[in-house]
Structures are given as C-alpha cells and as structure tokens.
Image (cartoon, rainbow, N blue to C red; front, top):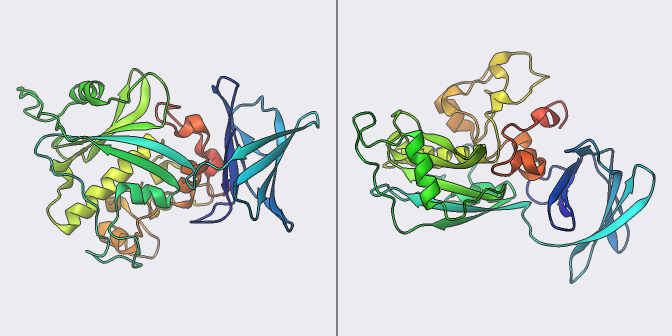
Length: 339
C-alpha cells in the first residue's frame, strides 16, 4: 500500500488516499476518502474515513482508520480497514516523503534555445508578495505537493532538417522521433516519468506547447516552443514559465478549467474561465462583475493550482494521473459540488 495523508501542511485538502499493489508490486486499485474525522490520544492521532471512492468496483473494503504517532523517532502509519464482510485487516506504512507523489523529469533542449530560468515573481505586479522567489517548475509543483526531480541534459538536440513543408520547425512526427531517440527513461510501462523538450518553433507558429504520445500511450511528455513564448523580457519570462507548468499539468491529465464539471455555475462564461490557475488561459480569463482578460488574470493570479487541481494531482486515482495512464480521467468526483 502507498498511503497519502493530507490533513495539514501546505493547503491541506482533508483527504486520505492511496494505491494497492499485489505481492509482485503490480498495481491493483486506488482509493480516496473525503470528509475525514480525527480522534486524538496522548500517543497518536486516528484518522477515520468512511464510504470511500475506488478506481474499480470490486473494492474489498469500505472503512479505513489510520493511526499516526504524535511523537516518534520512526514515523509510520498503522492502517486498518474493514472489508465488506466486516473483517478487519491491518498493515503498516513507513514514512517515505513529505510529497504526495514523485516524478522524474528528463529535460532536453534544442540547440540555440535559451535555458529555462526561474522567474522572479516580483518583477511584475502580483496580488500577494511571494516568499518563494524566484519560482521554477519544481517550486510550482512542490507547492502542490508533487516532487519533480529534474535532469537537464547538457548535449543539445540539433535543429530539425529543413524541408519545403515545415522549414526548420518541428512537426508531430519529428517531435515523436526526437522523444524516442533522446528520452532515456522511455519504456512501455506507465511510470512517473516525463520527457520535456525545450524547442524553438512548432510548425504552427503561434503554438506555445504540445503534448507527446508514444505507442498509443498518452501524456508521455511535452514540448515548449521559445518562438511563441519568448524569453527576453519579464512578460515573456512569466509566460514561458506559465506554459511549462501548464503543459506538464496536462502530462498529469489535468484539463483546462472549463473542461471540469461545474454543476453549481449556470453561466457558461464562468464555467472554469474565471479560475485563477496554471491550467487556465490568461487571455480567456472571464470574471463576473470584475475586469476580465489577460491583464486582469495576471493582476489576480498567485501562481497556484486550483483546489480541484490540487486534489487531482495529490489524490487522483493512479491511472488517472500517471503518465501513459488513462487518456481521460473521471473528473466528476472532483467537481465543485463534491469538494
């Protein structure tokens, strides 16, 4: 069992989730419990979850209790759950990390493309001064509880060969070939591994970034295009970091906010377009009775994911989040009416 406890720390969601594996460490099932209850004693805190959600219908348990020691040199969680026959099962999970998930990011650059540097969020006006400046990809996801271990390559990838159709711009086929040739972590398994390619120009010149697939598996990597994002002034540096975080979010199966279900918002103009998030489009931002558009977005955006997005990143079912997993996650369980 891999267990994720989210009741304190940075933006807690009050959710308990985890993944189950068989004796050969093959993935079996995922679970998630909301609306947790806690009971404290002198020695531990008990976290109680009832009537959870499961990634498969043949789940073998319904209630879960996690006991965490208040003071201990070896931090661990004692877990017991009740199966549908009423039997109590037990296991122990040793502490692994303060992060909910850990991802390896392999980062290649096209020759003559500028390295992505952290963006100083104080360069331009923002709604709340930030203490974590400057801000990088790893910082943005670290604040969301996701550890990204980035490996930057030192040998650049050559420009694509010039053709009459695309000049020296990248096409989907060329990007796929580059990923196969350069992504050293690539295999046919679904794993917490992403290929990131900093390129110059896409064949459709105003595209900031695209997703990359491999042998039918979706979301294996992404490419960001310097020609579209720019890099030379604060506005371009801010947008460049935004696009990097945005496209990596798609690798985790995060949709644009307007693709989430919003049952409590009847106005279609506000169904996601008002969200201040890495996954929105700044130029499509629309707020009721408030300024809208790109300038208004940046004046209000605090470089964070939305609450629904945090829940997906931290507690989405494994195959709905992991790279190469389900092409489309079930976002109904994260809708505003349920969180």
